[in-house]
Image 1 (cartoon, one colour):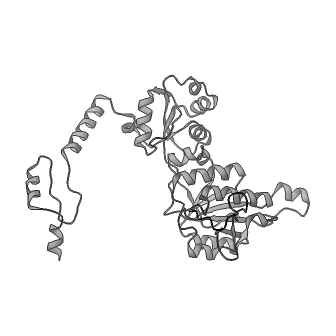
Image 2 (cartoon, helix red, strand yellow):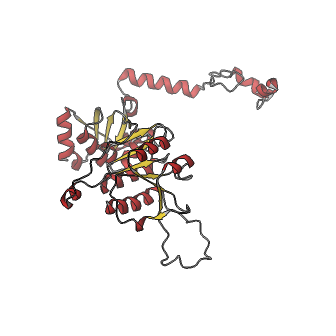
Image 3 (cartoon, one colour):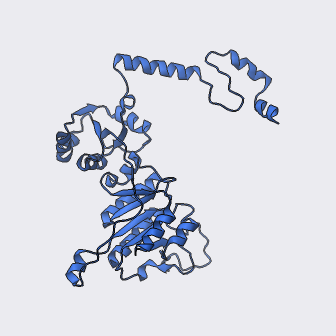
Length: 332
């Protein structure tokens, strides 16, 4: 009953806790009203640091800490973020002499501040990049958000001449259906930009945010690559199909799925849809695809024993994306 639930998990000995300094009783329903002495002391120390001008770098952040040589270079060049500060590790002469970073800072009127490696480590760790190398440079910058869209731009097919087709191949976009791991998203963006994908579409919800970790994993591709978002993925894909786009759903093991290596010619604008790391494509998303494709397992060394049991029966989503994109773009 309700009365029993309110007392669940608390013994009579807990009543003495109410007399502890800094203890506040909860509301009986798990409300977050308890505050420890440690938290009060932490806030007091932070207040003193602010008053004396000794705040940590993390406490002075206006935006988020974008770290890594390539992400910082790309952010300065792309100018899609508002950049507030630039920190470089003491003694990092290579970065202090980097022409791209220097010219980028000059163009935006930014001054470079040298700080200790420990300060940069703490800044990156507190920003969610724990253990990831910052390469001696971090910027305080505004966050990036994908641009909401309802449909993809129309493609004007080239003239019948071969030269026209060569100069204007059909565009290929990549749609990610709830890819949530920032490392996977970053690796996918890096591959997509390198191979020449026209752009990437992500789900507005249940997708990895465009964080500094994603930027680092993408080697800076996040900073300049066109990334869009849609509210309902399967409706967006249906609209693409209605507008004449081929919608390829990557779905390994589906009956009727085509081997991607068997696709030799693409003469229509296309969207490749990759699914979630664990669940793959959702049912409605798969139904919205006009074709399903897969990366077939090779019958090479190590795969000739049909009785060999193994848990390695699929590819990481970023690896599968690279293989399929390369095949589709080569056929376009």
